Length: 320
Image 1 (cartoon, rainbow, N blue to C red):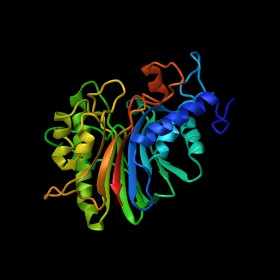
Image 2: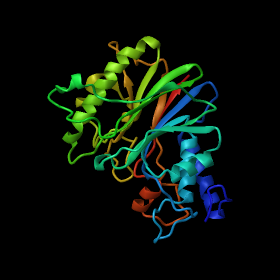
Image 3: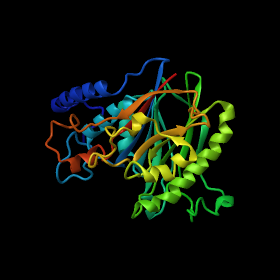
Image 4: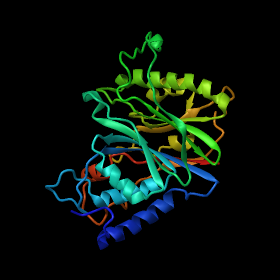
């Protein structure tokens, strides 16, 4: 059995050089004490893997060691990244951490039980040379007192996959990240209740923490099909703000459909339309890995989606 720390085959090493150059051309470099790079990525069914450098047709799962090399290389470009669809089996996650090195750490939830939760958990991976935990880790639960509904959208149960909040510190700046993965449902209207209640919860919390000069940022897979109504009726109504750089049509989310708007990074604006952040947003985007990932192999887009993901990573750069 191959190991992620074994010497790479020549074809994998050559592809990695191409992949690294592509990343460097599209994502800002880490600058000591000057910037903070935050990302979110739904990594499709991020659980088990086949410990071969290149999986074969009869292997299951299809994700292999070369896939992990690419995943780890993407993650390494950020200071902290929220990951959705981490499964109960964390073999792929463990190998990713081995490759990233001892200066990387993680914090994650337990597995969501029940068929609706799809056996998933959420995780944060972070570069401890630049970011550290600052003490808070919690899951969002709706109080019973709120059971009357928001604009006639009643959340009959708790969130299917409980949003996960963790606080971090970098260069004296404290920030709280809240990651989520909204249940897709059968139609877009099925998502409104969860989206509105999470937005209300965050708005209520943001009002409490601003006195402490902290930063509240929500990020993850909102499962919003298209730009427009669903986002406007839920998150934006509560004052959450998605910067224009991340609303740009060229910043796509899905490898299969450029119109999809699943993943978001957002924060609150005050009454003067000024961000409720002490961090200054610089720029953001996605990383389209299709042109360079695993190009030494003749893979269909469908197969690549199970090896890397069907989502692109979404990122934001802040000035410290």
